Image (cartoon, rainbow, N blue to C red; front, side):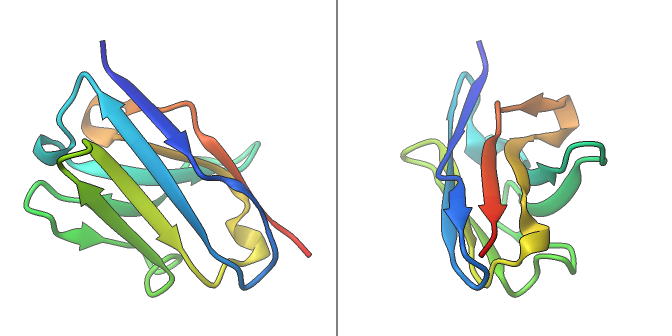
Length: 113
């Protein structure tokens, strides 16, 4: 049974940082393209980072330069370091395998003064 468990969300002030974690079981994160997405209620899920099998990271403009994805093969986990957070970064953040639509339960990130 595949399971992805995100953690690390919370309330942070604008300009602050958070580090999200996603621990996987039932799948090998090093053999899958792993993605980080976020969603605001009523809006479509938005891509914010990916890690390719070869370790290459990709980011859309909305997160480039502020977010950093990483992977720990020994822990079978992926991470998302988010710096310079803005109110518009608020949402539920999910890690997953986009190719198979496999997602965790999400972790809430709220950026507010």
